[in-house]
Amino acid sequence: MNTTIEYQINDGLSERTIKFSHDLLERETCLNFTRSYGQSTSATVIRRGIKCSASAEIRNRKIYYHINVNDSCMERDMIQRLIYWSTDMRYQITKCLYKYRTSEFLADSIIDLLTHYYCEFVNPRETTVDINDNLLEFSGLKSPKSYGIDPSNLEQRDYSAEISFCDVKSLNENICKNSCAGKSCKKYKNYGYANPRNCEQTICPFFFNGTYCDKLMTPKRPDYCGNPSLTATSGKKFHVLDLNTECFYKIKSSSKSKKVKVKFTPIVSDAHWDCKRYKILEIKYNTDKSKDGVMPCGKMKEFTVKGSKGADILVYHYKIAQEFKIKMEYQVVSK
Image (cartoon, rainbow, N blue to C red; front, side, top):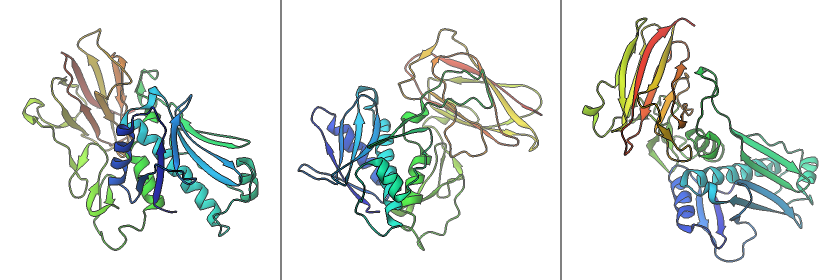
């Protein structure tokens, strides 16, 4: 697949945010996004749409790519998610055509493309794939986390709306996999990898940094947070999260055969956080720490998170300009 992708921005959209979103994605991939101002049939056209999505259609046996936006998805991370969908769509179509050693279309519609070339589209994470006569569309599939969460209907941010570490890694594994071949022999931890834009740099999932992605991130004011490394035992322990500053914590299990259980109780009962704003709390509780953790929002209420057996639980909270504290109670349990 060609790693240079042109894009056009229709009038009335936030050009600065869209360009910045492309620039940020460039820094962590081998992709080169070039803005086109003239007529280009190969460029991805960014336009206003009813829903936020990436789409493709065929006209005169040529495929056209679009990114559809509205006021609900004009934030940077949301634009990047749409760019990811569109790029992944290009990759999947290119991969399908490559089997036949052609880049030309012998199809008059998306359905013809599927039936003629036997293309199969793999769903990216938390994505709805819609295919009709002449439209292929990727859009968000809201998937709140429920396993290990009590209550299971806890209000959460829409993880499908924003780009994630796994999205960027997927692009790099599919499109940029040879960029650092023979240049980096480092053994990364926590699913980190060499940046294909600069193989001397490392890309780590949130919570981790360092040359090998083996170090927990530290806040600007660690003295405000207390001990970042906590150990859960059979007896209950407590720690108060003060959202007057940013903090990171790792809660380790005292036994590899048991699970860490953490209960979060807001000290202010009427606290509310808009789900469309940035995250103020994230808890990673599965063994795979490259995946997003649970991010509660809305009316902040008591909830419990239970981790995988023997796995650490990572807790992050952001600094907000209001008085808000959460009591964190943690221990190990057998089930």
